Image 1 (cartoon, protein in one colour):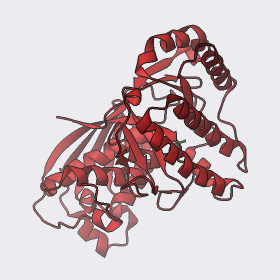
Image 2: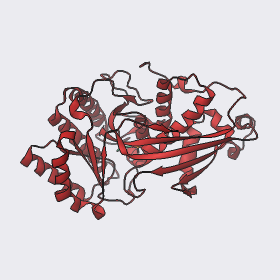
Image 3: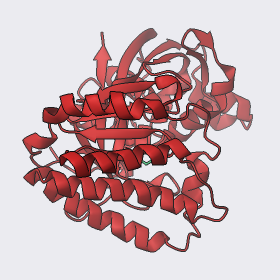
Image 4: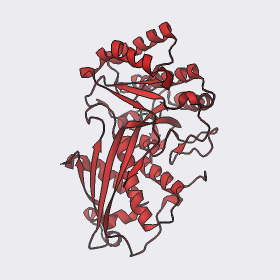
Length: 378
Ligand code: PMV
């Protein structure tokens, strides 16, 4: 079951002429929030340190992949032709009903990258229809849920060509492909906790794809809540691609990567023994370290906003006053994810409504919780 797969295992080998003519697959794929952060990578999308995330539930992307067979088999043309245009995978992309040519370059790059593992996509004209459950301009990254939904659609097509494929292989290859679109997307296939990146203490963990956290999760972390406070819905000034790259010559990089390994070791124990105070300590430190890496990059940058800091201070105050187990984490942006156990949901919701909403843009926030992974919609 937990056999580790290599890159070679992901190369599609069946070259049969007998391929389905047309059809479509729809997947609903969640976003995720990292507890130990991935920040820094090498080609091809190999993380410099392992990470772990809670899979979310309410924040998702729904993507339908329509495919229809082309008249000429394309990868035969590929080998004989030098024309780059002929080698491109043919597709159209619609987002929330509208044709989005400006989304094409990113997706074209992704499809070109994964074509060596799924060469059959060149035999089809593809139409991708996508929508998010969260507003597009909410500052919530849609690359994790978006890329994993597309990877799953392509895997459903591969399963038509290879019906004997196991679910385990299906999920691993979906995560492998999604990773090549966006690193964090590799953690959006399964739930409730997913590890991506090689770590000595976590059996089966590796740099190529995410795996379900393989140990028993304490009840304290079941149904954990994540309320996302939308502090700034604008486009980020610095993309995560640039941020990852700035880790290359970063003066603190090596220590940071080492620390992520240690934090994941400790968090792995905590997730099993239910130590909520230990959880808070690691998760908040990880969030601040991520932003500390941005502050100390060259060029340096700040993605937090004044309201991000106000929320953090309010959470610390509330914890001192009430001994609550609420804590925060941050993505590469100004929004704040408020994490808390199921049994504190009433008191924390009340705290959010009375104390924190004033710091959100237009009072907007999203109530989410830990989820169980992607679902195919039949
Ligand atoms: O998947 P990317 O390349 O957008 O990077 C995501 C990085 C963080 O969200 C900041 C951390 C993480 O592990 O998700």
